[in-house]
Amino acid sequence: MGDEKLRVGPVKLFADGATAETVAFSLKIGGQIINSGKYRDDFEEMLFAATEKGFRVCVHSFGNATTDAVLTAFENAALRAPAGFEMRPRLEHVTLINELQIKRLAAMGGCACIQPQFLSRAQNTKQVVLDDGKWYAYGDLVKGGVTVASSSDDPGGFMDARDPIQGSVMGSTMSDVAGNVIFPDQVLPFEQWLWMYIAGGAYAGGQEKERGMLKKGMVADLVVLEGGLDPKNPPIVAETWVAGERHIYDRVKPPIWGFVLNKNKN
Image (cartoon, rainbow, N blue to C red):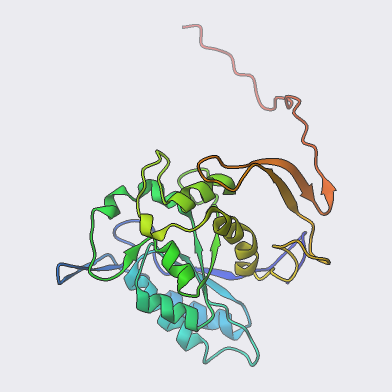
């Protein structure tokens, strides 16, 4: 609910973190299962409470063991949802996921919010060959029927990833910032990545009826790109429009704010 001045969206819960101890993995390697880390045991109760009050929920879920618990929690929460309420389960990050988990998420009408900039740290995971599950399974999520959105993860990310063009380049080539291809089997077209940043992002935020596409009655926030949709030679932003008006950004050097400190002569 709400508008441009004040909007209330999904409740965000954390089922895990982003360190080795706080991300729960269950890795099947060479027929053996190696468990690592532990997910939080307090998110399910909050998920139930939010759902019962009619709030959609998105859950931070890095590891595949975490994702199992989160999917089960969403399935149980559906039994508590108000009549006619569309839950739209949403998972954040999903660094490791398997085919069954993708099917479960798609079956409940869920979506995943992913960030291609994490590929810049994916070289080590590439060395861990799994019997079951895939790292950064962006292509598999889309092919499996999950609605996928992409985002910057700002300000929580470790790099400034607010440029969706750069993000689309990384995602459509599945490469790190140095250009090294990490998981080529998960490549999606450049245009698909732009869709995930735009229409996918609107869907994940529950705003698909007001923004995310060029359509009469939609908010006219848009950019005009110059150049082809080619990750090897990506387009640039030629024009920016907000609420139907073109914005010309002032390139004049901004005023300097702050204090002038005396230099230590010694």
